[in-house]
Length: 110
Image 1 (cartoon, helix red, strand yellow):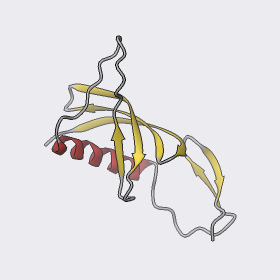
Image 2: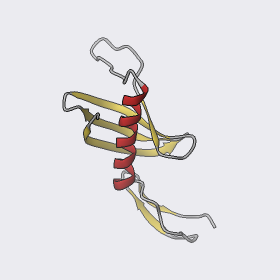
Image 3: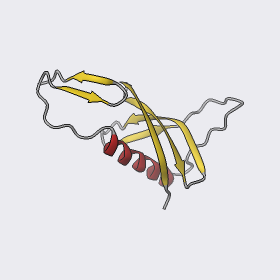
């Protein structure tokens, strides 16, 4: 089973499903850095978007099979749900909440 550890997440103000960036250690051997984190279109977790641009000083690595990708996505989703995007209780208009990395927000929905 693939192991993902030492996860670090940097949240950003959400834009088109992009919620932040993460770094993590895979199999205690490969460090992945600056991986974009997006909400899945089906709303069930998160998906990672790996850098694609060629820059001479950097080497980009991506999972090469679906099993590895799913293991990494699952570990990151579990980490984010436990530490950043917990399900919120029923909120009423005007309720204030603190969002890590973004600051205070006021719920305006009904």
